[in-house]
Length: 228
Ligand code: APR
Image (cartoon, rainbow, N blue to C red; front, side, top):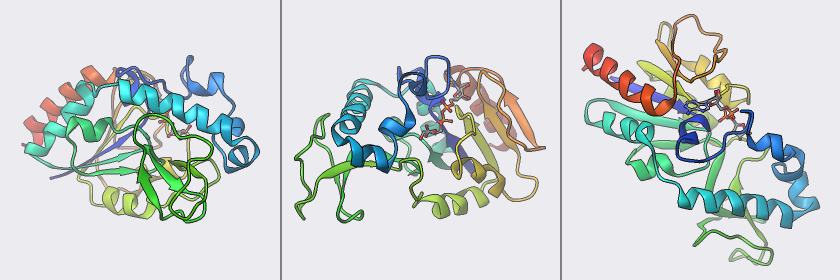
């Protein structure tokens, strides 16, 4: 049974990482156009590097929570794939084997000359003057607003194969990522784990109206009961 999780910032909230659109979200404090667009990086690379250095520091100090761990543990019984909008590595650190990052990875850097040249960042900072082997400035390996989402097609293929799709901690407001939930096969059940109401536009949705760290273990028991 193919189980696909589509996750957003909310799954990492209980690991202490801020979401974007909640009341204390990152986009309440920073303007997207100042820190999360290619134009911002061209205009003030130091500010953008600083913004992601702060995020990276917090990710390094965070730990996976029960939601991440529950998803990883479900691999014992099901074929599990994670399609995440998150740039943290908490799914991997919890033990998930198949993770697709739609919006990039905070612990990696990319050449500004050759986008295929991607390296791990040792430690938490990426600074002006840090250069790729080709000699160009390194940038965060993040998909900024307005940029292509290279993993989209691969993610759509995974979602298409899902027997059950579970959305955890996403407001489903950012495209094209949010459109993926409509790539499921006809009749594929959709579950949403989120303490707030999320408009999924799907008729087959079951809403687990609670935080991820309590909702995922409950949902996992239900899945094992029904499909195990
Ligand atoms: N457990 C589960 N869900 C939670 C929790 C929690 N503890 N706390 C908050 N949430 C939910 C919120 O109710 C909301 O629906 O997580 C969702 C967070 O939504 P956003 O902040 O919009 O995050 P996300 O959907 O991941 O944003 C998508 O937007 O800014 C871009 O690239 C960024 O990947 C990000 C994309």
